[in-house]
Length: 118
Image (cartoon, rainbow, N blue to C red):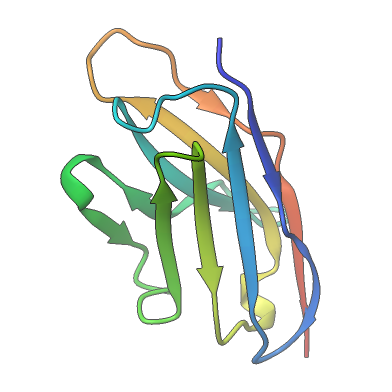
């Protein structure tokens, strides 16, 4: 079992920055693809950023150039640096761990609220 705990959300003005953190309860980052998802009210959960094996990253078009995902394997941490925030980024942000090998369990954090005021 793996617990993922997000932190770093909050209220920020448009144009501001936030850094979200995701702490994994045990060492999994070498065997899992780590992602950040978000869900705004009335909308489906969407992938924001993905950190896969081998250092590959992938971003939603809406956040490219503004958000950066990174991982600290030694600390079992995954981060999402968010710059140039806009009200459209307002959502609950979730950390996700998806096993690289087939048949494993996917884990989700409880989410952290990000609110961007105009």
